[in-house]
Length: 333
Image (cartoon, rainbow, N blue to C red):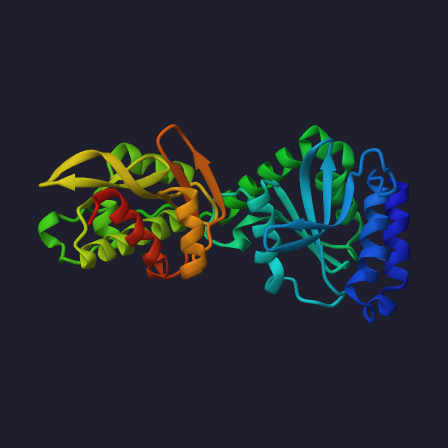
């Protein structure tokens, strides 16, 4: 990795000048030389493995790295001294929506690596590596691990990312409390749906799965989102009942307390960010998008319906037009 070592050394020799240039110059004189030193060929017309200004939903990403026909990594570049935190949701959303596992945000000096599919409640929980190129030895080791072309092509970079995230989660996980959890009796509940009330609806088997598979904070946010949705359902007097699965909570139509065999919409725990799916046709979702600016970001189909997926906002009522339309579609009311 002498080429990489020499490339980083040359970049650092000119760091004062780099502090004065724009993003395009950082791309040309910092990011591309590092990619070349890591085995990527930006001049190969046959493979087109380094795609600049790659168009994605909602914008474009500075570089997309491609293996064959498969997109494998996105890189977004900023100016040398630009703080990265304010831009991290942009590149991670680009990567998530495009099905790309690894996203990189860099100002040339600092590099943040994100695993776009990680289970977490915030973008910061997806970071598996931070690099400051002035720490040259660690920089070389980490860039090889996650950005070396051979490792990206073989899938080793993605595996390394998952390992790093697990190690971070173990390090961040607090010691288990010595105080046993208490179950709240139903009689103690108010009429309002709360996190604790939702948690007590979940079977022990599914709750154990949640605790083993996701962080406590993520589970609490999921239960809170379900509680807020239940409170909205209550205010609208909809005949819906929540039913929990290992990775989702689906809301089923009921008739005089008897659950019908049809779910109307659902909240997904495994996607990041949290998503809501509704069972309506894609053409209806397109019309809702035009009328209410409710933006959906992917669609799946089966023999019976389209499933339209929305990112869940901080305030679930922002999706009320979608939920109202879906409920009326399934009930005729």
